[in-house]
Image 1: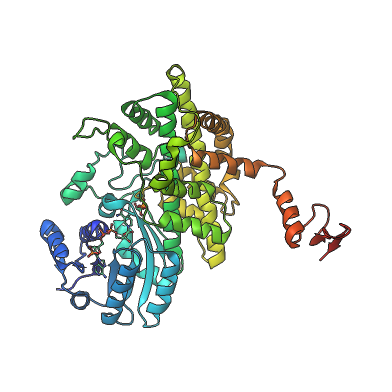
Image 2: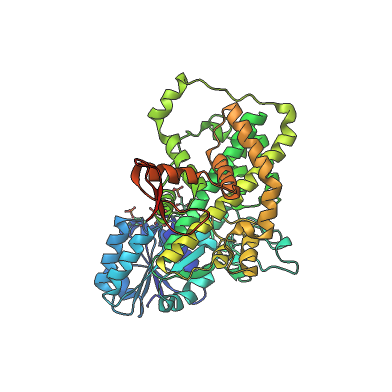
Length: 518
Ligand SMILES: NC(=O)C1=CN([C@@H]2O[C@H](COP(=O)(O)OP(=O)(O)OC[C@H]3O[C@@H](n4cnc5c(N)ncnc54)[C@H](OP(=O)(O)O)[C@@H]3O)[C@@H](O)[C@H]2O)C=CC1
Ligand SMILES: O=C(CO)[C@H](O)[C@H](O)COP(=O)(O)O
């Protein structure tokens, strides 16, 4: 018996993606893990998937009919390199290797070149949705040649999340829905545990637009996924700051804040991350009976995609300060030695004013919405700049469309982003689209208010502050960069342009201070 597709790596993502593939009619899946017992255990736990389990890459290759397709779901970096070289040794020209992990896009470009020298196709596919998404429908960002996309589409499209079709009236009623997505109103949602334990708990979504797209050649899929994760970092940090403003500014308890977030999730802030936040805040630690959030160490981890987004933004000259602040906020949280100096430092201590809490909650909600829009604006701008730099034909509206369901940053307003690019495919910035312009005009004063209040109260809100600075930086009729240009010319003859005539100029600062054209 031969299999249609192979999955390498049967950990959190690979096991669930393999089950998702195996649940498609007529699809037989072969699995392999370097820990062969892990792959065997996955097959034993899910007999309905009828997996073929390979003991080696060579056996996997022998189980697949040609031209072979294998999807790697292994850790980024060395593990991916080693899995690729194992496959290259046993695959043949015309076969295709798909890297579905969170690889750095520049690695994907280099790997593609190396692999394709042997006639084997290579595609880098960003996959988002965590373990439940992998099982019930992830969002997938495909990078690679048109030929690879044509081959992969029939395999991957059926397992992708489906975003609800919009009814008459467009975004007013159109909410994103992936299989396993929490926002279905008419379909009972299996809990994550149910979804993971039993494939029979899964109600495959067949209607709706599949959340998968070919976003460009070589590294484009992993590039777009990297920035998805950068936005994820910013979104999470903005939410965490809103939580701090409610807890420390309004004196609300975690359970009360959980209710606030659950309520926010009914409106324009509706998103998977806001929903998850409400669940985490409502949770009580079974060991101590205290709010779960109070017993978790306040030191955040990171696997690297956020930092890559920031490094790439620096290389591309794309201003993504809110994403950068979110990455640095995690670094600061984990810098225990640095933070130990805090005890000796003066400053205000937050004092809650509970009597104003209702108005404050609404102000924080609006500030969070403004911050969230600005974080997406930054991420999408970085995609546009990166696509230009690398020659990828990435359609930002398509990116927004495939993020509407299945992925971690799925949110109601992604419909609005998709609409904005559909209305104007040449949109230079989301900020000029009427919905986003009007939303920011209606929320910017709240963003300003919380940043001022937080600074006065000593509550750190780096992401909200940087979102406001980004907004005001864009609004400023004249930037203070003119002075920076003057300073650069003074100490380094770096030259400058003028507002009143074309050309490049230098002032003879050490001489008679006359100006010369250079
Ligand atoms: N977890 C998540 O929510 C998400 C993860 N991702 C990405 O998906 C990929 C997989 O993540 P995840 O499933 O969480 O990772 P896990 O560590 O749970 O699983 C990876 C599996 O691959 C095995 N493996 C490593 N190297 C090889 C190899 N050369 N050949 C065969 N098997 C190998 C590992 O074995 P061993 O334990 O021995 O190393 C392990 O069993 C990563 O790139 C991750 O960044 C993407 C989206 C979401
Ligand atoms: O890819 C993902 C979702 O799309 C992972 O959830 C993400 O990698 C988590 O990242 P980190 O551990 O850095 O917070």
